[in-house]
Image 1: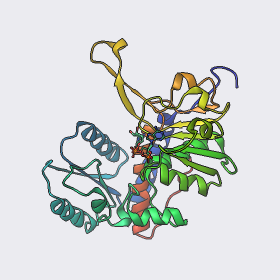
Image 2 (image 1 turned 90 degrees about the vertical axis):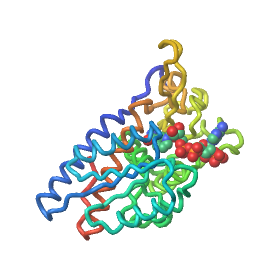
Image 3 (image 1 turned 180 degrees about the vertical axis):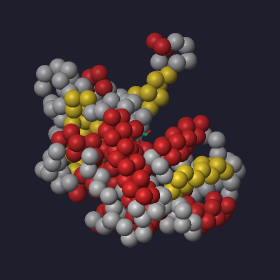
Length: 302
Ligand code: NDP
């Protein structure tokens, strides 16, 4: 591949199209069966990054024509109090999706809270029932970030069958569900992690390389097979002294400047996977609203 030839995968533009398509689907649900999908977002504590995410989710939910319910609880909230709120939201018919913003304060067992959500309203797709359905080919609600990665890959590459995919990172929210989704697309999947031997060599064999690690610019240019599609899930804030004292910038898990001349296609950070996550959350809320009422789920094809 010649220098500087990578196609830049514009996740922001794709997410904009997906969000617009969701808004059309919502309008049809309101006009037809008189269903307005509703998303409840629960924020515990005052983590500033989480507060920004929750605000963005609420704004985009309303912009898509859905109902938005925000629940802000103090940092000292007990697990029992949070479980009581989840119980109330499970029973509220106006609520189709429930999202508990992570991380939670340390006195709360996050997995216990996630597993208390009605799986039919688990729009984050983290409930053990949805993880199991995804692994066994059922009608899961699929975690938003991996869903966004697969949408971008299919848009860029078309059929993914037979391609070798290497995912670096095996978390429950990104790496593992993405491995299931790419297997379902008939990729040959390798799931790499901190104990993987010869990580660079594994990455160099990938037609599709996904980095979901949380280590700034860990994946170097010479880890990439020429022409590979590179999806950078990482969001890392690093010091940027060139921008002034105390300034910071966002970088991914891939050294973009080195990778772009080698890759065939690559997502930037910001503007790649990040915007897809909220768009897929809106999409999942429509899916949940339809499935709960036995209505056909509108097509996500764009
Ligand atoms: P986790 O910390 O849960 O998982 C990180 C994974 O990376 C682990 O599997 C870990 O391996 C692996 N890892 C850590 N160090 C190395 C190493 N040196 N070599 C190989 N593998 C390593 O992270 P998340 O999955 O939650 O998030 C990953 C990144 O994606 C973060 O930057 C996060 O901010 C970002 N993110 C972005 C989202 C978006 O909307 N774009 C959404 C979610 C996350 P092991 O299991 O062996 O410890």
